[in-house]
Length: 364
Ligand code: A2P
Image 1 (tube, rainbow, N blue to C red):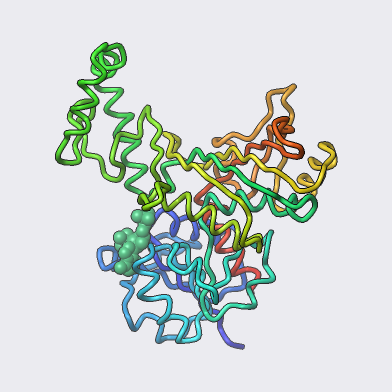
Image 2: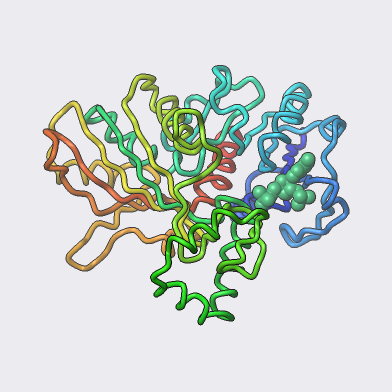
C-alpha cells in the first residue's frame, strides 16, 4: 500500500510547533512526516512522536521525493515561492499565510463551516486568518438561520499571533517593568504627558528609550501595558490589512460577497488566544433562547454564557483548546434584530494549527 507522506513547513515556528503537537494528539493515518524550515534551522533536532526529527532546509527540490500533503506555516513569501512547486508535484498544500486566501481557485476553509470546499482545490487550500476563523464558526449557524445583514468586529488579539518576536516584546516588557517599576510609576503619574509622547514619536531607532530598556522586536510601540490599534500594515483607506482580511475572508467563507462588515483589530498584552466583540444585525427576527440553542448545537462551539455565575469566555481558558468559546450573548436594542456576542479561541490552535490539521484530516 502507498505510504502517506506529510511535509510540515515552518516546523520551528510558533504555529509549526503547534502543528506538531496537534498531530501528536490526533494520531492520523500518516506514514511519514518531514519537517522543513529555513536554512538557519537546517540540522536542528525537533522531538516529535517520541523521536528526534532533523529539520531540513526548504528548497526547490524539497517536494521531488513525493508528498501527499503539506502544512505551510512559514509566512507569505515562502508560501508564494514553494506552495506552487509542491502543488505541481502532486502535493496538496494547506497554507497558513494570507498569500492565496483571496484567489478564486483556492478554497478558504474552516472545516466546521465549509468543508465541502476542500474538494474544489487545485493543489492549494488556504487556512483563513486566525481572527476570521473563530468569528465564522460562531456566525455561520446564525447566518443560515437568521440571515446576517451587517457585522461589526472589534478584536482583542494576543501577541502570539505576531509570531515569536511578538511574544518576545511582551516578555521583555514585563521583565523591564519588574526591574524598573519606579520608572513606570513616574511616567504613569507625570503631568507632562505631551512632552513624553513627543519623545516617543521622535525615537529614531526602534528603541523607545523613554520607558523601554529593551529593543522592540516586532511592534512599533511597547505592547506591555498598552493596546495597539494596528495589526499588519495600514492601507490607503485608513484600515489595516488585518481588518481588510477579516472583512474579505468572512464574505468569501460565508459566500456572502456583498455582506456589510466593518472591523477594528487591536493587539493587546495577552500571550495567547484572541477575544472578539462581535455585533451582528439580522434580516430576520429571532428568539434569543432559540438563537442560543442554535449556537450550542453547532459544531466546534462551547457556550459559556451564564452571567449569573460570571461565566463567559476567557483567553486563559481557551488556551490549548480547539473549540471556539461563545458568551455574553445579548440583544442589541439599538436595532430591530441584532445581537452582541463575545467570541474567544486559541489563535495558534484553532486559529491556525488545528484548523490546518483538521483540513488534512478531512482529506485523509
Ligand atoms: P526558521 O526557524 O528556520 O527561521 P514564526 O512565525 O514563529 O516566526 O515562524 C516562522 C517559521 O517559518 C519558522 O519555522 C521559520 O524557520 C520558517 N521560515 C521562515 N523563512 C523560511 C524559508 N525561507 N523557508 C522555510 N521556512 C522558513
